[in-house]
Image (cartoon, rainbow, N blue to C red; front, side):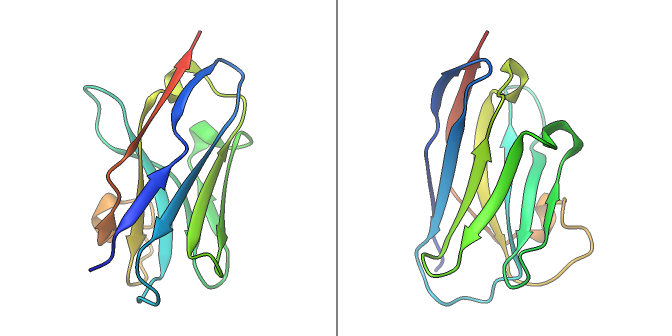
Amino acid sequence: QVQLVESGGGLVQEGGSLRLSCAASRRPFNRYAMAWFRQAPGKEREFVAAIRWTSGITDDAESVKGRFTISRDIAKNTVYLQMNSLKPEDTAVYYCAAASFGSSVIVSPAVYDYWGQGTQVTVSS
């Protein structure tokens, strides 16, 4: 069983930065991509960013382009989300996810087999 453990959330003022980390408990496991999603109260879970594990190719949601950066450390079996210039609308629970197999629909939660428990990010104005 693969477990994904997020860390790094917290409370930050508008314009501040946070870095989220997600460590996978098992190595190796078949992994095509890892991603970050977020869910605000009363809203659906939305895609934030994804990274193909082998190639390092990334995708970002339009709402975070130029502010958030996803990266991975293969040796540490960890994926990161560097969040800069945070806005109150970034407030949400952030989830890490892993997809075992490739898909052209990398932004869909349905592609992902494993999920972390989530970490709260709150941005105050």
